Length: 459
Image 1 (spheres, rainbow, N blue to C red):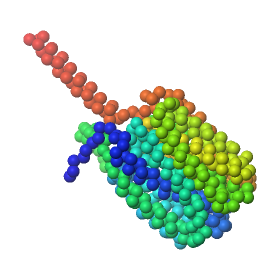
Image 2 (image 1 turned 90 degrees about the horizontal axis):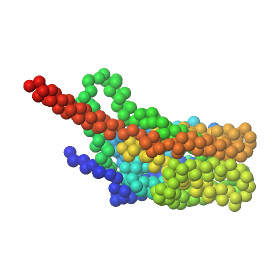
Image 3 (image 1 turned 45 degrees about the vertical axis):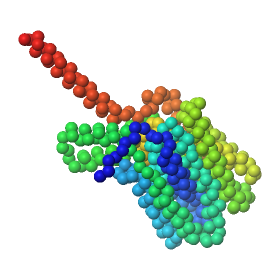
Image 4 (image 1 turned 180 degrees about the horizontal axis):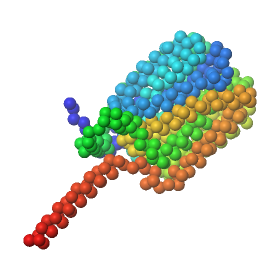
């Protein structure tokens, strides 16, 4: 068995830039496809004759599944490797779209596109971000910003491509071709070379020490203990990290509404299908540039990254409230550019703040739990917007509600932004364990010195 080489600290470069490139391409395929499924919305509604609220689930389920199942992706990364998990995800997601070719009902699509493909996409999504957090420290925001701007490129390129495929081959043929696109995730995942940090070695040493000190326990207790460790449930006991996750829930609840109803709202104003779909492309390219730019700027540390993040959320909320007042295509284009810019700030810093609160050695499960909250919000966002449209006959109320949800998520962050770094950092269990062992050793040494001194006095 080859000896594992532990690195003292993240290299902040080297093969890390290849990891960034692989994660960038994964975001083009995974998140770009998920957010571009809104192009299928009008087609599915026409074919299956369902309400706007029900049809919206076809866009919200895959997106929410990508996030909700990321917790399992993080656990699987702990058990195997990020590279293996991503490659398996590429096969599963492609299989889900192949099965969708035979769909005759919306229920079939909910399971094939939503659950099966969504699960495969989730296995490709978070491991790349976790690997960047392990390869980068001082330049983490810059590297993360470059990687996640793949989402913007995907949102720019894929909606027109999906619309073209639907027009040329029908929605069934389009799904088959997209399944081939998702198989490329196996290639991108092969680039994720594992790295072993000093933090990992400390954690292994503490585990060995605790296992030797513990008395034999029942199998069920050991199983529960193993599950708790694999999914790192203790992260939810850390108040700042939990507040941050709640904020993510509110943000995604509002942000998820735009990717289904922005195009439909433009069509409702009289814009043709192709120019309306191109609005998402404009938003995507603006977001791609913004993620790189704001990732780099946040690393300059002119202001706290939390404050920088809150500025992005405030801008998102304002854009949502302004969209209903846009009555021309030119104004909608301006709204798309601004929305992409502010969402670039938000997305560039998610993984950075998660690493800040949980540390590099626990970032896989930290991202998993954060994405669970995002996924729950993404699942509800589009259907809530659809039901508001069914109730009012307009898309305006959907955008107003989205702005309110995002404003509330900013308020949740206030306690974190006003606290100190010591309060916001997850306690280092390994360090506490090491210190306690050292203290026990020192106490034992002092006890022997006192005993020897007493014996000398008695003599």
